[in-house]
Amino acid sequence: MTISVRLKEERLRLKLSQTDLGAAGGVGKTTQINYEKGAGSPDATYLAAVAEKGVDIFYVVTGQRLSLEDRTLSTDEVDMVEIVRSLNEDDKGAVKRLLQAFNQKR
Figure (cartoon, rainbow, N blue to C red):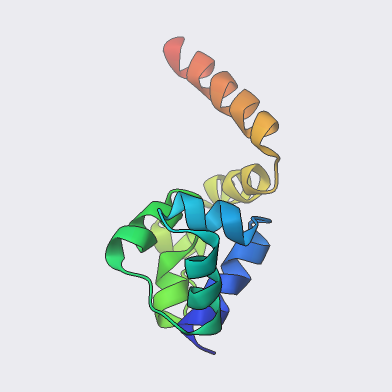
């Protein structure tokens, strides 16, 4: 599997359009399409920007996924991250506000 195929796979996993992911990476839809066809290669600036949208850049570049466990999270933390990742943006915001409120009580 190539970088272009993995990039498209990540875009689809995140339920983003080519226009949306391209914009997040600072490129237009045509450039995004070209990246996904292998007709161009994304640069580090693009990859850093799309990482902010949740694209697993390590996977896109290497073809290997680091499990959350590999990132030194506890089992409970892994479970929570997986749940949050499945939420829509409004619900993610609500969870973030809730956690911030709990943190302020310390």
